[in-house]
Length: 217
Ligand code: APR
Image (cartoon, rainbow, N blue to C red; front, side, top):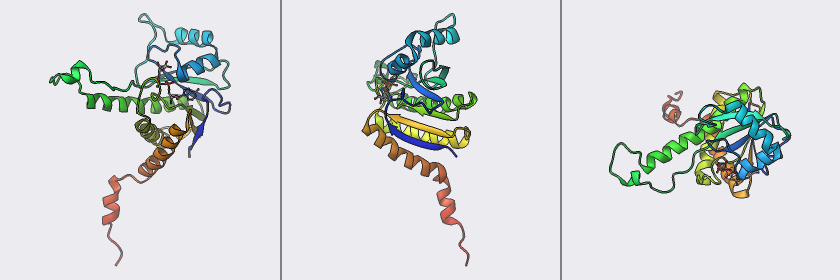
């Protein structure tokens, strides 16, 4: 059984964790926020060199949104950094959204895509950590800073994706820690985890069946 923990703190200060997750960009470049903190703590030059050595091809370095790659953690006290690319929240309608054109994705569809990509960033990170033999993983609140994903919705997606993945796919991961930078994120995640744990353990599909079971007479 995987233990899920929520703490308030800094993702770079989790010495007991095998793999910490970076909220990366799709070019895997050093950035601000979590990304900047992780690069500084790992050593900017060596992390940057590792990314280029491992993942550069003729088109440069890139990682699809919703996917992840890993590097050593270098000067961080962890074994690995998993660089997961969360989605940018589609906040402003584009010209396409205003066009009555079925070939273009509307705002609602783009938000649904973002939701799937965010869930994927969490689940793929856990799967990669498991393949790497990690027993513990720490996540920041991916996409909720510079990428603008609304924190409450992001917490729901994170909670559901992580709960499902550790139960269905990566039971070997013993500890998942959500490292929240502020109290609001922590509270949102705490509520979302309770809801998703109940939904995963008691799926609503079964409710009718349970209610209509014949009672002994
Ligand atoms: N530890 C834990 N959480 C942190 C830390 C930290 N050291 N620093 C920031 N946070 C929190 C933010 O408060 C926010 O809630 O992490 C969450 C994610 O914020 P961002 O780092 O801005 O990540 P994201 O929204 O996914 O944007 C990714 O930002 O830094 C760039 O290269 C990165 O382009 C990418 C984009």
